[in-house]
Length: 539
Image (cartoon, rainbow, N blue to C red; front, side):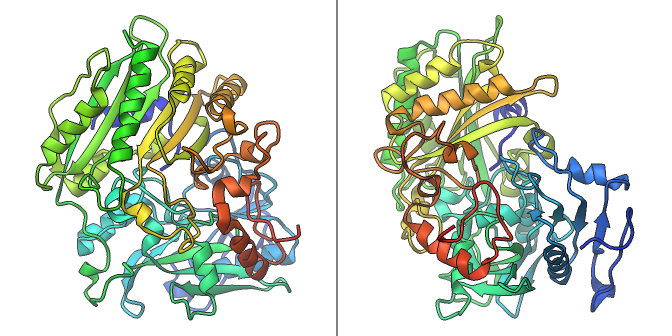
């Protein structure tokens, strides 16, 4: 998932080493270069391509302006690019899909390694697993896996997100309640790391506990991107698979998807009715989020945009999908809508359901590049139980009154739980395995606005929602912390986090100490860092 422009998403959902040259291209020969798909190339500010690379991101709040972009086409090229930067004492960052909520790529970066041309998806017979390069987008990955072998990974709905950061942070999407997190299928990972002497090298780390590099594999099962090195490639395989047949090594998606949507107008939506809506919605997930739930194939996302100014205030929408061939699928979705809508006024509008083949549904219901882009500030939380009525009232107070700022705000509650929660919290770096919903608080604005009021608005919404725990979703009670793929630097700021609980606990819980040990071993010079990166212990 990624943040999106409010208008773009709602429309979609309702429809169901530097070289000697100072500019230009700097080719560098490598072993086997004739087979390399690209470069490497160094692009500096005088090159017209520099601006294209500078705007290759979705959060337009930030614009990276390094000394140069290094566009790479192979692992060997990444090793050289990182080594060159370290020897020159230049700060290096990495970008795959460009979907970071915060300025982790651009802030202070002198060299940005861009992975966009490393986008191959293939079956590796030697490893018996599917290889996905870090620059491959989710939609590229879904297409290749499905059309080639009839399989998929349970990744996100935003098709332009790339594998590089998505998988390292955990990865989830519409199939996760049924199949688990993306990282639950991580077989191996290739990472370019830097040792204590400053030497860059590529390391492959696997799921096998006997692998001497196993801890590096574990860190990439939810430890987040930009922490330990540059991921160049993932290998994916179901750890329960016993076959050598590629068609049996990853989950098979539903043959077809039944999609529907329930819509409530803001007209007539009182605070009491809004509270009932959120209570109904949360209680359904409290009843239907165990790993063995018959409703595991049902996935929905409750979008609550701020009420608009004017005669048409807009509405609250609940786009939902389910495996169309699941026995009783239509009834299950009808029952879901009925449970959420019970006692809520105004009455929900529920258009006829639509059935479509799975990959067509994945493309149609996915968010494209235009819908994902804009200026925004996002904040996240996990919910282990529903919002309290008091928290629902906070949402109503912030979103239910039209205003120039609040009308561009959004509360987003996404389905979670199911098979996600069947995994031990220590088995992967993704520590939170008890939640039933994910929360996103979002504010968006356009290029004519400076965004200050919008950022303050969403900060206020988030802080007020979690007021009882110091303004942040401290794990415990009905909260499960926050999701590192939706990073929020405010969680590390004592102005906004008054809980006394460090940001590292909010994102990593009891797994943080082990992540620090991995950091000490694999990035002892702290080459790879950003505002919410894992710090070496003692730093």
